[in-house]
Length: 254
Ligand code: PGA
Image (tube, rainbow, N blue to C red; front, side):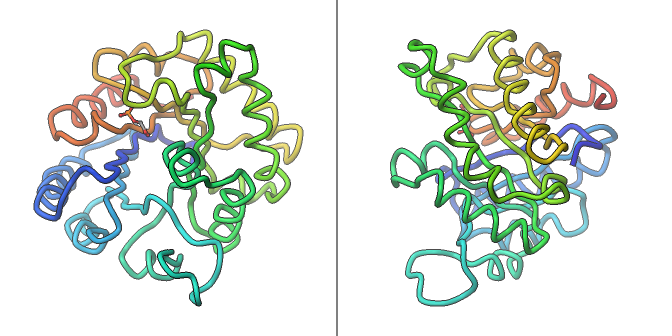
């Protein structure tokens, strides 16, 4: 997953049917021109099929914002991996901080979701990140370690090829605030080290949290930043297009 820079749009629960399809229909033809960037989008569950159809003739990949940790069965309100595959998905996001804080998803549950999908040869983005209070207390690495522990306990060297970690400080999501380059570099370095020690293979690591066309070039210059997970700036074609153009202007991923 590290052959190209990755720019992922997380549409959260913002866009309806018409907007989702319309945005995908503009992004799909544009994505064919990309050399150094893989563009992925993640609409709400009900629109996965429609959006996948709109992207079917293009390299734009579509993914779900969550996925169940078990095969189809008695899991009311969950959505199975086989269902999202049927809807045309090629990846899933798990452990977004909104799932962890609003829906009390634990690091163990997030790891179970990831494991099931990775073992089925699927691509997964796992989100991790600290709150502002935790950073103020100097506990960032401790928090990252506790979120990564069940992930590392359930991963093989080859699984890491299909895994992306999104470092998303909770205090940067949707706030307009974001960490310094040094803070991003330290967190990404810490994450990479944890994986190298456990499976001798560092996954792709994305930065997420208030990424905009104004700050993206500077963020992409940070070592070990392989791309971004983008919320608000992925909802409008012009802004998402601008982010992808910035990634393209940086040339190949080293
Ligand atoms: P944001 O969201 O870009 O709006 O800060 C990022 C995310 O939640 O993944």
